[in-house]
Amino acid sequence: MKRVKLSFASDVEVEFCDRERALQQVEGLARRGTRFPIVVFGPEGCGKTAWLKQATELLRELGYETIYVDPLRREFVARTDVKELVEKFVEAASEAVGVAQLKLATLAIDAVKWLVSKWRRGKVAVLVDDAFQAIGLDKAAMYVKSLLGLTEYPPEGCEKVVAIATTSEGVSKREIGRHRWAELTPMWNMSRKGFEELYEKIPGSKPSFEEVWRLAGGNPHMLAQLYEAKWSVDDVVARLVEMKELTKGFVERWRPYLKEVVEDPDNLCERDFPEELRNELISKNLVVYGMFYRRPALWIDEPPPERDLELGIGEEVAWQSPLHREAVRRALEGRR
Ligand SMILES: Nc1ncnc2c1ncn2[C@@H]1O[C@H](COP(=O)(O)OP(=O)(O)OP(=O)(O)O)[C@@H](O)[C@H]1O
Ligand SMILES: [Mg+2]
Figure 1 (cartoon, rainbow, N blue to C red):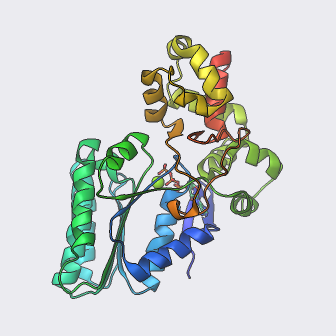
Figure 2 (figure 1 turned 90 degrees about the vertical axis):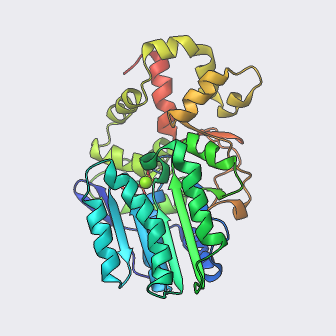
């Protein structure tokens, strides 16, 4: 399989590495097709896009006409020899911001229908990245339902359809989970072994792997952030504090509860934990709430450990990465 090249930092490109099980799972999906669209959720920056891009390549090699779209960033990869279709994507992507996002998302679905009905292709895959941020949460369920329309009742003449969408929004996960329309599937940060492989690819002098693992807990985006910040943990954390709006007011209002979650994320499930704060921590993408049982069948790639408080992983709730927790810890200490 050809490994895709990914932009890791402004001056570093890396080849897709690790995620062996996740790629085998794609092969499995390719053999069977997806009965329900698979909606993959996981921490921000855990590597969903990287995996989806590699899957695009793999599915093509397995004989699928494959459409990958990232409506939000107006990116697409149309791995098909139908030129007319590729042109349609180029056209849609060049529309004005706002219009293009919606057009690309819709086109991805239409493309599957056309590939089957008009161009008589038997195996078609549609991979939609960051699906719901672009089209809006209110339309997320409807969108997944139209993907379901493709997988449940594939257009006539179609052998197999594979439909996968990703999201890093805890809120959209909840919205999708309410319906039976999709197979909601979590993906976690990289395993220690895979993360080390990626770490080794980074040029220049760097802190020990142990230290980086303790900080990023396998989150490749956090690794990239540390690299870009010349390994200044302070800079990376300060940025997170700003991005997540961990303001003085927020911290003062919730101090005792935030301390509890920093100690052990599962405290978020306690009965007297304020619901408002729970929702805030989910929607700020600081924690993943409702971690699935660690049965491999339920996960894309390897599930995380059952509980690892050093990495901020609880049974039912986990910090998206140890650095996310560190941002809250520092905000609590008033350090920036
Ligand atoms: N398996 C991998 N091999 C090599 N690089 C990877 C891998 N997974 C992720 N990366 C790199 O790590 C960074 C973050 O990954 P990616 O953008 O795929 O995460 P994401 O889960 O899609 O994030 P977001 O939630 O923001 O959409 C990227 O720079 C990507 O190139
Ligand atoms: Mg992504």
